[in-house]
Image (cartoon, rainbow, N blue to C red; front, side, top):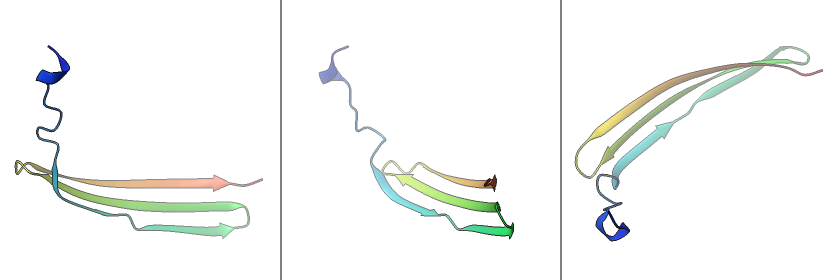
Length: 64
């Protein structure tokens, strides 16, 4: 199959997309940080297919 026969744009054109990523970081004691980020995403392509995502990310950091 040659490159001229492959349709690279099929089902990949995005009709609508939205992302929201609120996060919170706090330092309860010196040199120690904790945080969380909540990510929401939604996408629809021109064919009408759509999908969404929700992700929770937690972290802790110790600086010495």
